[in-house]
Amino acid sequence: MEKINLVSGMRSTGKLHLGHYMGVITNWVQLQEEYNCFYFVADWHALTTKYNETENLRQDKLDVVLDWLACGIDPDKSTIYFQSSVLQIAELHILLSMITPNNWVERDPTLKDMVKILKNKDGDTSENMPQLSYGLLGYPVLMSADIMAMNGAVVPVGVDQLAHLEITRDIARRFNNIYKTELFNEPMPKLTQIPLLLGVDGQKMGKSFHNDIKISDDEETTAKKIMQCITDRSRARKDDPGHPDKCEVAYKYYEIFADSETFNQVNCECKAGQRGCADCKRQLGKIINEKFASIRQKRIEYSKDINKVRDIINEGGKKAAAEAEKTMAKVREAVNI
Ligand code: TRP
Ligand code: SF4
Image (cartoon, rainbow, N blue to C red; front, side, top):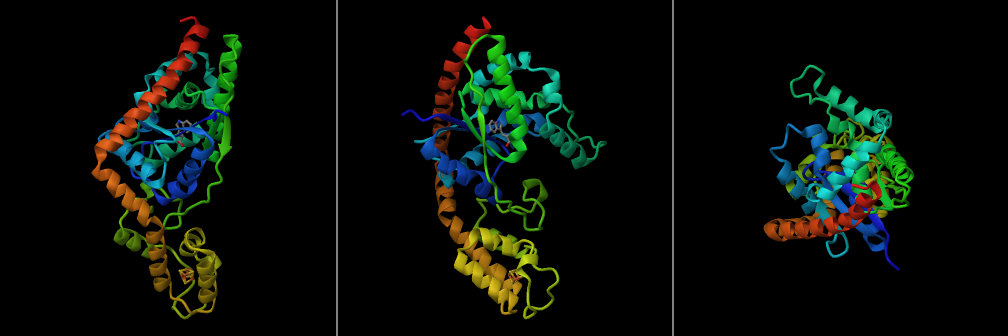
């Protein structure tokens, strides 16, 4: 039986962190067995907010793919590409933009959140504050084109993307109605249960908050960052009994990265005042370094052979373009253009 098409993308934010790994990438790796996966770097989407910060864009795109490959996204199983190398997506985007009512995008709550974040980041007066553009308003329409061009039936996303996906389904239905066709299916979101991974400071983990641990960080950097993790703030001395449930970051990392035996041991020793926070975090750093050792090794090997990585992306781009061209031939006919 032919596998059905699954599509998902990530914006080209540069090197990925452990939150991406736990939340998205492990999930993508598993999905490769069940679906015909199209995984792409959404570099056009990156421009919807960062059109004036492109100096690192090419390196950032490559870094995302390096992380994927190191983590086990397999080019023999999945199609890996840059969004901008599939021009058919742009063509579909423009056609979909013609049939998308203004108010569908204007009321998109995810987009409203993005705008709010943009405004808050630098304050409204900053010169760096990007203009809210026509392109940003079209964010969900471009996402729809990403998915529909590949005939995607399933789209793994986080909960923040559901509103965009709803618009995609509406657009697909509207296209079929207007052009009296059954060309498009309504892609289903596949909600990823994302274990929330906090940054070392206890805020949401994110590159812009400078609280993240990268997949590609070396052991020393990782160990240093882990030492910054917030613990039980009420604990003064290392033989005071600790409160694992009040240990804001370190204990939560144990829960995610350690085996259950170690996790239980930490719990008991902490409560009994038999475990100092510094030692506890040193051990945590080792556990995380062990867990990522082979991934990091693989990443180093890929980065030494960057031409091979470029070949993979070019091949993926060709495959994706071929798939999109099949769709577009039918779309052009349906639209009579
Ligand atoms: N908007 C998504 C995000 O920020 C990335 C994305 C772009 C995407 N196009 C997509 C995800 C198509 C799924 C399908 O996470
Ligand atoms: Fe957290 Fe470990 Fe310190 Fe307990 S000993 S508060 S679990 S860092």
